[in-house]
Image (cartoon, rainbow, N blue to C red; front, side, top):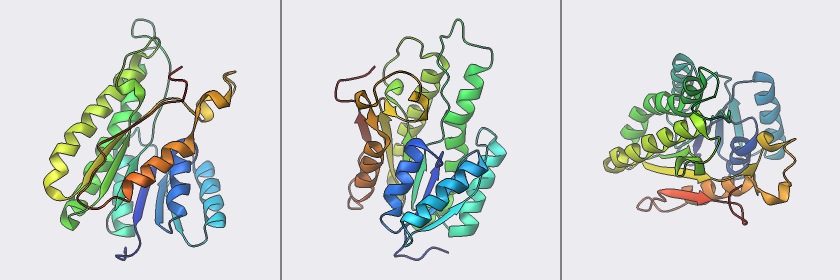
Length: 239
């Protein structure tokens, strides 16, 4: 079970990109990390690297395909059994397929809603009762600039991110009386695996660590302060 001096940080999509960068930021603070990703081998490799670099942090993992509501709920049960509660939850699991509503493959909306929205919904619901009983906690939902503005070739991805933003805003209102903070994180293009091989200069994009540092900073505020939104874009604007 968690002690009062060690924060339990739950991060989904933690094997790479923004999720891994966020895990590294909290590992540097000596937190207890409860990490999940879909691919077991990649998740274990990421965990080993974190443990080696930050021996003062405890790193635990559970692979899960969060597009399956039952696996999302099982992940929540694992967190509760392992740590008692989540002090910080980072809903970062995501799926991106470019396309337009009129021509994208059948099932694009369903598959991206399953990962980008339903995973956060079901996992959060599983963890909320313990957080509410504790009267504390901080939930970060990784939305996107695509949650704010439609753009060409956004299609089902943008729709799913608009939906996640709506979920996050509603959750913020609901959790105010319970001492639980909710932050909507809306990053623009950051250099992750999605951009490798694209031909775009990495210097044109943000670093995944930029988003991670902002999440960490928001988590450090006093109990009476909440950063509701974090909007980050590359210096030269969206691509």
